[in-house]
Length: 208
Ligand SMILES: [Zn+2]
Image (cartoon, rainbow, N blue to C red):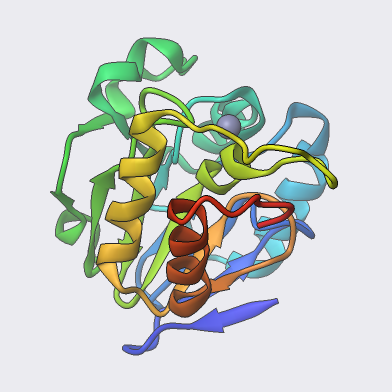
């Protein structure tokens, strides 16, 4: 599955879920999250196919949970790319080539990577969660998973204040598309805004 942003950046899945993603503008290739160790063979083969002779310039980690970071060392070994991670949680990431770390904080601009975009801090799902805005789309990691309740729940799922504030921050970005890390779904701005409003109004959320 492929998408294109307003200015022509291409976004492509590497596996059947949204994790990991490759974003390219022809000259620069950015990888969002890596993947589980057991998926490395598939990831590596697909990267060869997608990138051809090109390299990955940087990996950006939406957060440090193992399913997002387990193949980080393999990716860095293959491409010697930079690794962008939120500064406060860098000690939670296992990277052999520590010199490749680029520590980011709130509102970090991606211009140095040759990409038009920025990083925003969206704590809640985990302490170091970030959203990655590229042109008119955004990668949002696992935040939506915090809201999911099982069918027939009697009460709405309570999320932390941080998670709720972060969701509001995401709504405020008014991006065209929102890419969660898991499953195949992608949300429009209207869907995310509607979801936020339903949650605020106290509606039980059965599914995101
Ligand atoms: Zn997670």
